[in-house]
Image 1 (cartoon, rainbow, N blue to C red):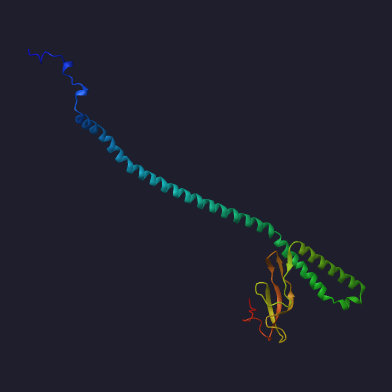
Image 2 (cartoon, rainbow, N blue to C red):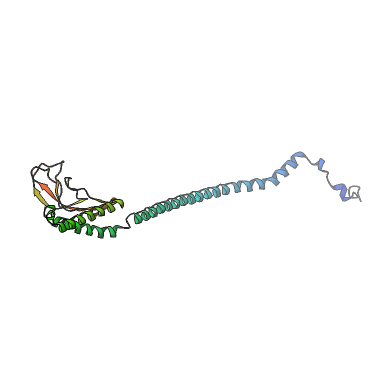
Amino acid sequence: MSETEKKSPEENVVAEDQIPDDLVAEEASEVEAPEEVVAEDETPSDAVRVAELDAQNAQLTDKLLRTMAEMENLRNRTRREREDTVKYAPQKLVTDLIGVMDNLQRALSSVSEEIAAGHDDLKNLRDGIEMTNREMLKVFARHNITEVEALGKKMDPHSHEALFEIPDPSQPEGTIIQVIQPGFRLHDRLLRPARVGVAKGGPVSGSEKVDTTA
């Protein structure tokens, strides 16, 4: 057996310091290459995921803002409805009281002051009705119930109801010259329009003729 064959296996191992440097670098690059490939493959997927999350975040933010705006509008609408309910709650009662006012006015107009002056009992009755009428007006004023201005005013179809026209060239056409039945408001809500007679035949006030048929 030759001398080479007689050497032990440990003697055949090449020491690390005997391996050429270029061979070591080549082996290292072959080992590290898969890691670089994996990193390049993962980078696009991360960017896509971030873009998807940003889009979801934008959608959720938009939904949240819309919901908050709807809730605020609902709160405001509920508050206004509640205020209107309290504000106009006595409307039915006031409408009935207006009918009582009408009867008081009819009683006063049925007996003139001249006729009542000659009869003590009749005068006392008329004075009592007149006092009751004034007290009713005070109560109305305390509860924001006001009479619609009519006499001498220009006809307004939103506040007045014209029952007839009266020829009167001395008054501008459309001017209210007679009130048949007073109108009333509760706060800013019209409970009943004033029923009136308007002048006809005089100069037209304004650029257009007043519509008395509304």
